[in-house]
Length: 596
Image (cartoon, rainbow, N blue to C red):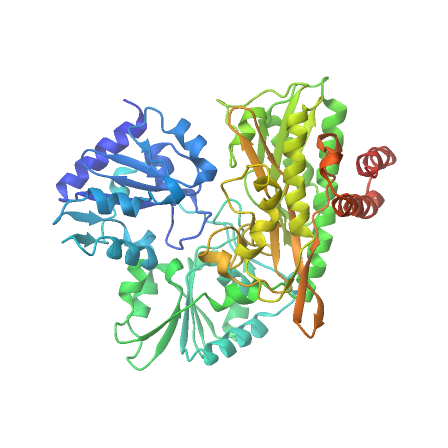
């Protein structure tokens, strides 16, 4: 029996001991963000599935895993012989885990989960789905700690300052902004559960997660103090002294719930249901007035300030230099040096690491050769690592964390001569990316409205892709960071209006299972274009800097405006990067960016 089957058998035994009929496990830690420490990668340990988004449901006779369209192919492969089955999303995604529980769990059964990693918004949906059944819910069921014997410990590295020359606003200014907005919402306190909000507010960064410079922490902002719940050993003495001057009080990480229970009946607190755990929510004094909204720091930090914007343009040059040198090296060495997906990823990471103020990757580098590119979030392993030959499609999605910004960029390149089908697919994706980048729209336009611009050229040919078109990007924080996003969804970030200063990805795609994947991604900075009698209008500026493979373009499919935008973009890439390149690299990049 393999480890996943052993884990499943042990979990079922513990469920039986505790008289639990259904056990739920989300991909989450107590902060309910996307990137979580290995200590909380429960689903990976239990099932062998390594994707970042999933829900597991276990009963006496069933063990199922749900994930989104990015990971369906990957999950199907990784769950083989695990004892867990991949549950397909169904038409319009209506076959989710809540619907399965509603349809399959009998009256009177006990449904349990660990309330520390289960959001109150998810709990409400579960309650709603089961309102017609007499179900007992248990939110105190941590069954995993007893079973996971070699569980990784939490990182122990200390926090560090994010200097004013990069972040642009002092802690004092940010605290004033947040408190001013709290007053407008009639709130005495603001519970912050997302570490990225806390890192932004306090101008610090940490190393508790692999790809985001975060410190596991909670905070409560009050009128005079900020209570910071964190492992005290991770706050250097100098930073602690600066905190003390601003009324930032450091308390033990596990005392958050105790403090929440101590507030007076006539006070009010802002929480964000999607990022507040059931355990924390249940600890709040029930007489306290609760105001539910998107967190104030997430709203403010989505709009980059002047200094941050200046740094974004600088960091894109550095990232572009690393990418250009990598692709130059790749072309020079192809055919003479053995290359694999893993070795190429390591080489690109090496080029990035040489750049000033580099902290690490913003996510695990994706190098996907041919059919592996059809997995939107493929990760090469020793078992899957493919050798790069002289004919095929290479997709590379990568990014870096720097003190002066966060990057994310995808390029799809042809090795050898591409087929007409590959060129057509690539060009249709390119048209969508260009259409979105060139958009002009009124202030207040939302992501779901912009989404059709990127999908239109694909839709015209009966094609589509299953994930969102764009996500917000943090500043030396999370590479996926809202509240805004661009997707067909009428909920979540797709409903959030765009504002000048927001940094968002533009990454339409096309996947042909068993053949290849195509995705072209740039980051876009939203800016004010003009104001007329009909309102304020916004546009996007492409800030990512890396050539697009002209060998994959079918020029006959592009209109004049699209050709001009591509040529203008390539001219900008050359002008901004060439001063930092060698003479040989300049000549090479000139050819890559010449007009089509």
